[in-house]
Amino acid sequence: MFPLKLVLLVSSSILLFFFSGGDTTKTAPEGLDTTQSVQRIQSFPLPAMLTFAGEAVPLSDPDVRERLEREIIQNCYKHSATLLILKREGRWRAGIQALLKENGLSEDFFYLAVAESELDEHAVSPVGAMGFWQFMKGTASEFGLEVSAQVDQRKDPLVATVAACKYLKQAYGKFGNWTLTAASYNRGMTGLDKALKNQKVDSFYDLYLNRETYRYVLRILALKLIMENPQAYGFVIGPEDRYKPYTAKPLQIDTTITDLPAFAIQQKINYKLLKIHNPWLNSDDYKLVIPKGKSYTFLIPAETE
Image 1 (spheres, rainbow, N blue to C red):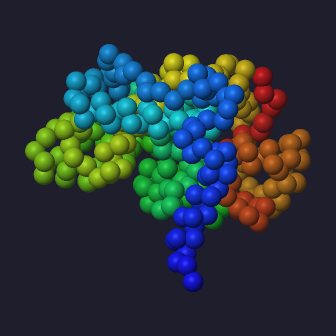
Image 2: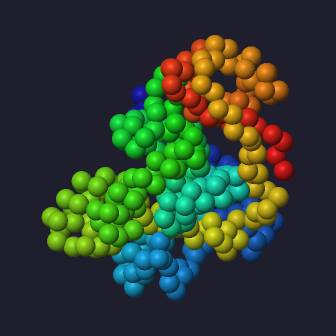
């Protein structure tokens, strides 16, 4: 019997000969205008200068330039994911950046949330990090988020943003530098501090790190560039294409709800809308037990503008 690899090789050669009309030197079907293409594959020029939270990015460093270019290319040609980010941005940018500003943080940290979750409140990592800001359960509790069988505030984009602000301000108090603060969100404060001391440097851009953190800040910067000027990077999207912000009124509840679908109907909505506007509801048994002395704020949707 013939070896399997030989059979596959011969079969592939026959198919190639057949579909090329016997001429394997042809590179395109006859009659196809190769001067035009469905998609233009290109590199993108880097800006003359770039900052993160007011701190200059050393674009004169060849390594930094290559790492930034890699992230720009990968996010530009990850078409569907990046286009969905641009659409979701319309719903979430204003609210998240308002909270960042209110907490004394640069609006550039919005792009950190984008890098973490692609603005998907239900995003979950292989290790169990959850939500826009990808909090692990232990870290979430440390920074004031409730994570239980019935409630998971990591999935509430705005409440989780407040918790992320607490982390970022604590990290800045340790490092005194916003770029290192951003890097610590991926590596952890202890791990990043240890790397700085071991390598005897004080800048993120001078560190040699694990692959994920090495790319992390540059991915944030690439997303900032693309999202601030999507047309320059090949994305055609107008205001009408972006998802509209939710409009809802707060409703504080301090007693147990035994039937969430019935509760939704009482609010003149349905259970689906209740879950969409309150993604922190984590219960599969359609009820929310509220201990005495505790309350939760529901967002009850209104028509979007």
